[in-house]
Image (cartoon, rainbow, N blue to C red; front, top):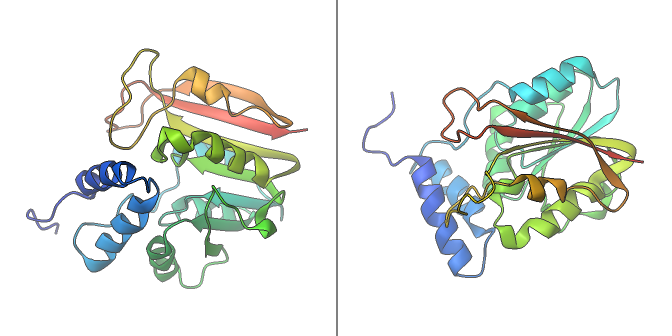
Length: 226
């Protein structure tokens, strides 16, 4: 049973995100949040064991057959485990060592290669290896000042003929950018995913997820490198 006196992790994330940006260290808050959860100060963030519904549909239609998938910002591993269970040789990374420690504890016998890595400064062994890149809600968790570098990181992961599945919440044109995370994306910002030989193969707006506080829906984007 949740202790009613325990702060919500989302409130702490908002506070830490604003402070990190103000201090000029905009990625600092991820480790701070996951470390706080590890100490029991807040519940584990993004704590679910079911995969994202968009990913589930994609994977059910495209089993891996031994091909390689890379998951960005793996958190507690629900998406990564689903990929591995459906034939994808899966590498999943997070910038937060505390997050990676938590997911390894949750799935101690996992076939997934969980590791600490930074989308903004990828290790060379991950560059150009992914037949499928999974990017769900990580770009929007990065401050807009980091967006160009984040998009470049997504593209760099892709192997020749590789695809990327990207899911983000919609920010309507003219809607104010919030001071705290997540920093949602407009259509024009989503379209910036294309470039460097990577094309947008499909772009849709899906209804909001059940219980979501973001009412404009979700971008579903399929990128391809040719």
